Length: 222
Image (spheres, rainbow, N blue to C red):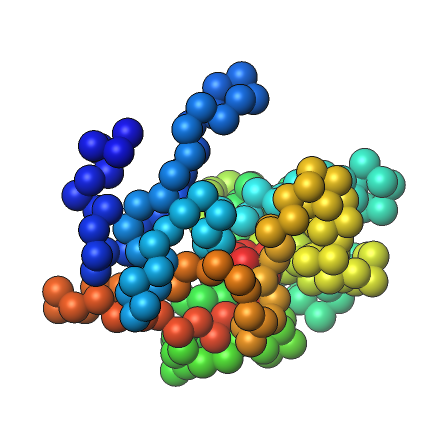
């Protein structure tokens, strides 16, 4: 395994952490490359990474658990929880949000069309208002598939409206703490210091630059 990763396991290169697991047993774990290029901080098995859209699975699982708890139905119209969203003439369900079949326009695209930048601070209410101002869907719910961050963002807000808990607190209580995933959470505070966290980098004209994230909305990422 070390030989396969040798190309990236060098100073000046971002990398990652990994583990080889078979039948519940960790056979091998390690890190390669660096989590912080300013200080040559190497990645290790305990390095913490921002998961971005990989975290969507936990948002979807939260919907399944809320249904199991009798608090929602996946076939509920989202307007039951979001009366500010217009009636488009079709029922948009939570199930549609989960499967990216809602037809809702992606708020990240709308954000850019509005003249804003990904470097700007995203405000939860501003994004809700942005979605609610749309006069139409991209398609009839269930007819097509189109990746939509809007649906997963709304599900995070739904958790708060149904339970009074943030998605971070809800998933901590029902998922991460019971599984002893003590270094895992939805990162809803961009100013929070996370020990052993790897920085994010992007290559710009062959030069690696650190990405300074102002993103602390969760559900669609985190």
